Amino acid sequence: MKKIFTTPLLVASLSTLSGAAMAATAAEQPTAVQASPEHAAADAQVQAEIAEAATPDFDDPGLKIEELLEQFNTSGLGSTFRARAERGELYYGTGSALVMGKPESRDWGNFRVMAYKEALLKAQADYVKSLGVSVTAESASKLFDDKTQMPQFTAEELNNSSKWMELLNKAMAVAGGKLDRQLEELGIDPSQFNAAPPAKRALIYQRAVEERVITRARQSLSGVIPVKTFEAHDANGNHAVAVAIVASDRFRQFVEDVLDSKGDIAPNPARAGGPTLLEQLQGDKRALLDEFGIRRLYDEQGYPVLVSFGQASNPYRGNDYQQRADKRELSYAAADSQAYGNFAYLFNATGSYRSDDSSKAARSTTGIAHKEQDGVNEIEQRSLEFVQTIDRQIQARGSMSNQPGIKKLFQWTAKHPLYGHEINGVVYAWHPRTEQLARDLKNPQRQRDKASEQTSKVTGTAGTSSSPDRMRADDF
Image (cartoon, rainbow, N blue to C red; front, top):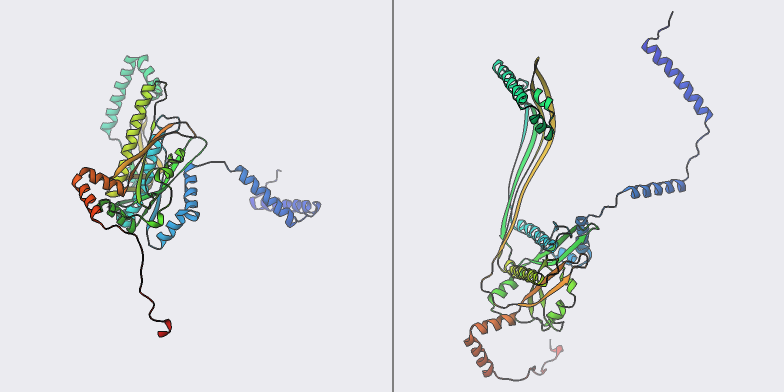
């Protein structure tokens, strides 16, 4: 007679045998030698090196830009700006953007310029929001469960469906292989199309949570100035740029003085004695490739000067000299527009920011009813989804009306050191004395009045004087 173990007896027998085997195995094996601390440290180092080697070497220009900004903020001029910003003395911020085009594009240089514009807009948007922001937020949660919503076919629908399938079969029979070939070209099996039954769908369960946040801000950008730009790239030609901006009451007052003083601005003796503007700017053309926006410099006499940079690339690659010259002139014209625009953004500009962001997470069950030959087949289809929509717009609008004293210092042409693109740039400057000269040329009587005033002045030499020491310190 065959012996049959019950489940508890079988488990106990197997446990007994397993325990005995493990004990015998343990008795046969020698005692493990405990690893020394030196060996443990060496093993840990080996494991760390293996993990580091397994990590992919991925150069992200966006991350490199963040590293450059962090270095600037901790050890460069940015550390001073950030420290003063933390003390509430000024505003300091940054923005970054990716260059959309690749170096293979003839307009890559212009894509690079527009990336700078985007980075500046992002930095300006943060500034605008810091001055005042309006936010509307709303969120909702939904829970729905109703199995009665499972779709059903009525007798009339089933009858009409049968007639429709009959007509479809007749149409396919008449069309023959022509319709079959068209369906196959679309990736559809004609037999499946012929047999595909109609279906109905309905939501029978859903759990969802969603949120929508609308953010708005609008403020003046006058006096906000970029102080430094950055760029990073990887081996595949992907580039990212960044810009740092500063705003302060003191600099805004300087901008107002430029607009209201009619050029009557005194030099700063502490800044006198340095190189001329041309010596500061024309020494290295490649350095001009990284200059965007507008800066305040000082000339050799200590006068404050607003210097604006513009650049554009020449997309022509052929050997026709006339076409190359025409395209170069067009790129210079585009650079001129940028340089003038920088003054408009600095003197009188308004920035606006609007963001409409929504997020939704949902888990749903859909009831599906299929019409088949022998009746209706009902199934439930489950889904999990996360949907996020972002609609963000940043705008800056500047203006300048009949401002004298802005003059082109020089224009330049350089080849990009990495890709050889021809970049054409211009440098414009506002100078107090240039504005005064422009006003004199517009109004000759003003120039004659100044000459007469200078003639009537008494000439002499500078000096000092003081009273004699008639009292002593011990008198007090």
